[in-house]
Length: 319
Image (cartoon, rainbow, N blue to C red; front, side, top):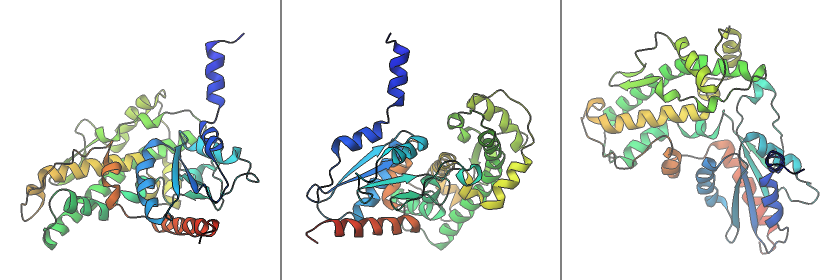
């Protein structure tokens, strides 16, 4: 008997990304159709914008969001590579905490894995922060003293944010390594801190960074319990720095909140007291979409894109 539950289960078992590739894939040199498989829809604006610079003329790019990291990997595993060209189907996968947990992360010529936790970690940098303020908030004529003040504010705020994020990421690593289902994507890290003219600080109702953990448990749907996370903190820091292991969406939350603060309080932060024009409506949900044009391509991704371009030029009989 076919039930609603059986239909839901059957639908969930279908890899839609694989299906979409099979429906429109063509190995014909005349088709000139390239596929990108990314984890989610929010990855599309950046990869589409940056790939366009490298894409040979006449090629059509189709970007397919798999839904999440696991499904992106499953898409790669599900394709019969004797029937599909690896030059025409490329994958963009976040490293996450896989080098700690051993999570399935395939290595192949058509797979780009971020150097840091996620692509957001590569993009939300001090350099991009300054570029955004100068080019998008009408502060292009600030002097070296203003730039130094911005740099100091950013770095001191980041250092404090990293201290707040450290026990959070340690707890997440504990959950992942002990196979505990936790929906930490629901955790609103931006609600744990505030920004003032002196930098970033925990919200007043938290006495220490560990006091944030009960909220992490609650929002992640895990019953609260006190756990010794020190070994996991040590493990995190043994391989990577905070800018590399903090979850990309958390980094994005810090970046967008810090950017909004300076944009609205530039006269307080900058020695020149110049006022920014906060006209972008920039926020957590759209920061990559609106700023991807000024975000640099990471070196490893540049190398990957150059190889992509060279392979496509060789694949095209007209070149």
